[in-house]
Amino acid sequence: MASNQDGNYGHVIVQQPGINNPPMYAPYPPITTGGYQTPNTNCQPGLEYLIPLDKVFIDQRTEPFEVVTGVQCSNRYTITNVHGQPIYVIREKSGWLTRVCIGSSRSFKMSIYDRQGREAILIKRPVSFIGDRMEVYNGRTLLGSIEKIIFTCAPEFSVCDENGVEKLRINGPLLLCGCGEYEFPVHANNGTVIGMIKKQWSGMGRELFTNADIFGVNFPLDLSVKLKALLVAATLLLDFGYFEN
Image 1: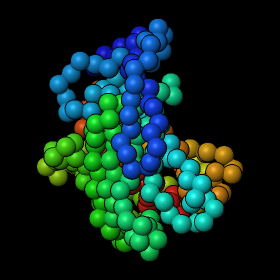
Image 2 (image 1 turned 90 degrees about the vertical axis):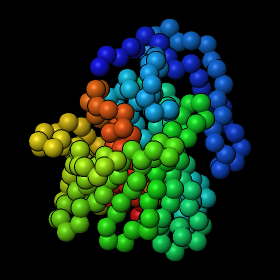
Image 3 (image 1 turned 180 degrees about the vertical axis):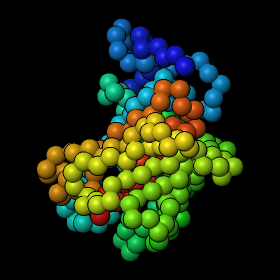
Image 4 (image 1 turned 90 degrees about the horizontal axis):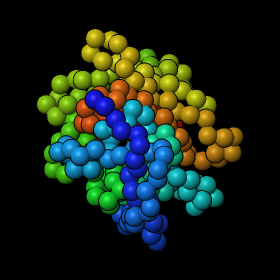
């Protein structure tokens, strides 16, 4: 699958007050170099921005109130391309009481908005104490699910399509302390490593005093947009499972 890197997305984010409102967008002049051209495609609405990409960064927003009080806030993230251009924003929807009482094991819905303000991806996660599972939707269409494989020594997750057929498997290191860098290889069904989810070092202060992490997600350029979306969702599951506390 070919990609065109001579254009740009043609929009920038205009911040709006309030954390519960979907992002708004406004046009900006074309960039003559760098960036990507959004492909003309008939894939699921909102997922077309993933087509020309083989790597994204997921950057969790630091919440000052959470840093000062220790009270869990709803998580917010920005997804960018390798040029630092924002592609999506992510907003958690969960109850205050569940965040305080259950912490990272809480149930939630996570909305991923594209550059046009559309909800491109919806992630649903039930309360998790032993196993862990997410379902990923585009509108009302189920894209697939991610499920933690229990009774394994090291972290291991199964990425399945909408029919429950495993397409990818994610493995992690045996020991995780929260701080530092960690790699989670992504394996195809034949065992070949075809991608990587990497929790990156985000600086001493941010690592020690906040839960805000930065992840890099690599995948093949010609991987289906459904599986790319599922790997983005899997990264959020890894964040909640191992780096939120």
